[in-house]
Image (cartoon, rainbow, N blue to C red; front, top):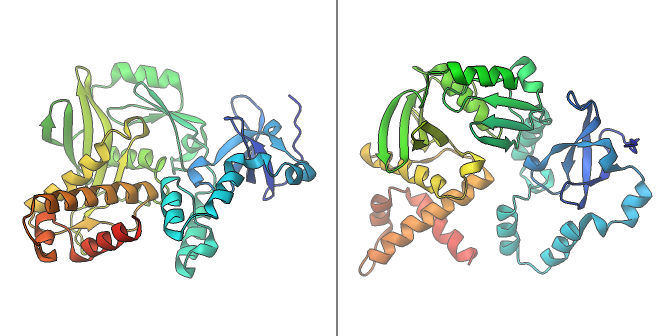
Length: 358
């Protein structure tokens, strides 16, 4: 197909997406696809979370600026309709809408310190080369950049062993590895088993390579994850689904061995094929059960990702409402604190959040 693009890097153009819609996007980088040899541009869609950034063929870009102006309505019944409806929203409704739909804040909406950090982070992780990973039976679309080393980080697809998490560039290497790999579960100690669910505790110092590979995989789906290689100070809790073939990683959370802020969770991820099944809430609850065993009141490390905020608020609301439902008469914040193992500041935050977002 003819390359219609005479576009310039850094300029916003109208892009035809796979779902048939048109959307304004900023062109960030140009390349020749190593497999198809098509000219492609890496684009960031205006107003959408960076997880939607992708490589698109040059033929999908409309370079004519007059077309961009004339078809503003085209670019978005998806976008513009949303804007017109947002005008009718209260500030609280818009905040909730943005959280649920993962609308990314502009730098102007952030405080100066956050904006500076975000700009630095964006510059370091601007372009994602790995579009897909093969993990067991799942081919998964990636969301973000991950610092896989050397030529691995420039592949459009990586093949990853679902048991040992070794990553490979070629399918042939992957197939050979499957016949040679003796693993059928994560390393470390199994500390929980119920039905087909199992949790393994893995020490980052003892199983360093495995935990580094886990963090590299996780970064493909977490925007602000910064832990890749310094895994020794952390314990990793891996949730798996168990069948006759072995234990398949569903997700995990990590936790500092010694946390000055008393954080009971540093990072949490449920892999995309297993999301919306309650596994995130299970891992959050598991982290608080560990806090109970340690007789400490912990909280997750900040800042939380957009998905993390939604998951935690859902869990905190559920826990607090469950306690209030079973209580007779009044109950103090101190009593709530020890029943839920939540700090006072968090309980107050949830009270305010619930009342301002209802």
